[in-house]
Image (cartoon, rainbow, N blue to C red):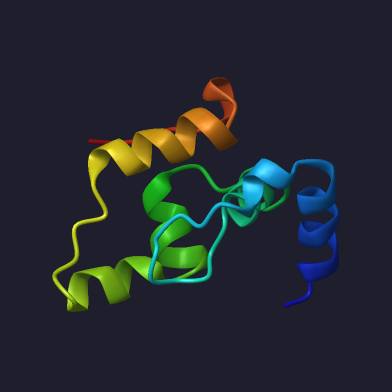
Length: 87
């Protein structure tokens, strides 16, 4: 998308953000961080449902994304003051 070059730059600066947020889909922690820092994403649900639409695929496949993975996303990628998680 339009932000691909910026996300690639983020990956160059912080290669550990290349980790996928789900093994079966291409979305990375760098994208999550980009959404929080540049697109005002406020919740995990906002990212999974509105930004990358992964939540809909997970629900349709009865997949369990898991609270521990959600917490990991927040802990690794997002400053606590800037990001909210509801569960």
